[in-house]
Image (cartoon, rainbow, N blue to C red; front, top):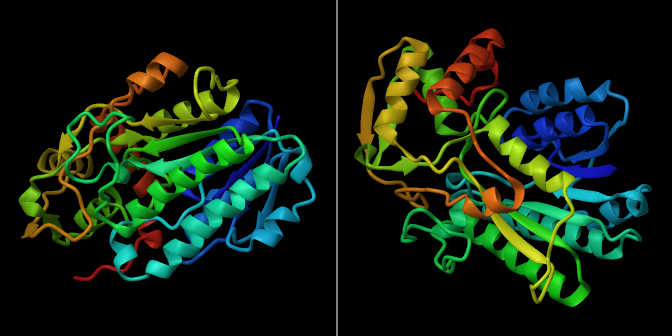
Amino acid sequence: MLFLVTGVAGFIGSRLALALLDSGHRVIGLDNLNAYYPVALKQARLQPLLGRSGFTFTQLDLSDHEALLALPERDEVDRVIHLAAQAGVRYSLQAPFAYAASNLTGHLAVLEFCRRAARAPLLAYASSSSVYGDDTPAPFREDAPVDKPVSLYAATKRADELMSQTYAHLYGVEQIGMRFFTVYGPWGRPDMAYWSFTDRLLRGLPIRVFNGGQMRRDFTYIDDAISGVMAIAASEADFSGLDRPHKIYNIGHNQPVALLDFIAEIERATGCEAHRIMEEMQPGDVTQTCADISRMQADYGYQPVTRLSEGLGRFVDWFKDQDAARFSLPADG
């Protein structure tokens, strides 16, 4: 099959493209290579893909919807995996219009691409655990109310889900939304806590711990996340019994970890003791995430297998081997 993967230079997108190619599929990869974090990291993720047979890359900003519609392969695409987005909860407080352009206009452009394509491709798109807000009972079920986002990022991802529901209703565009829960691992994002904590511990710098460490996160190792996306990408979706062809699934681990325990795991993996600076809760953050994955298990046989200690150990080994500190965000002392 021919897959269109947006955000192909991103953390999940690059790993997904490799998995699709390894499975014998062809991949068209799109990415705008923006500078939210070092472009050199995105280019490094692309390198293993650029020499592969069956892979083509186009640098393209999805907010330019006409450029997307003009892709010469538009009518040949079998599946679209839409992972491109402006990521980060805290950055949305600083650059809100970047989220409107990428997450709203970009998602709408992908919907129009699928609606107008001759082969009516299945669209699987990235949503986020952030849509559950901060008062959803754990574990988070896909049918829980999600009408109280606490960040602009979360609001844009929920808006994407609503736009997708509308396009499924109006035009019959078949879609699956994937709510990812804190995906981590080698080649990840330097703006995320596991990366910055590792970087700072290895440099002998203190780490900032928000809300007194009283937070819990459902950490999902990258290989487990990819197994979930691959199951969705390779299967025929069943929308029978629904009033529109649209489903949503959690892709998480279902084993939330307290922040202080998470820090202790990084200390063990790095062999360094953390100097903690305790700070208040940050605007837009949530106290816990926890995925109910029973729907993914029932429909796709999804089963995450990587323990946090194992996943963080792999990440720290990769971080050292790749000298990944060169991709880190500037340290603030």
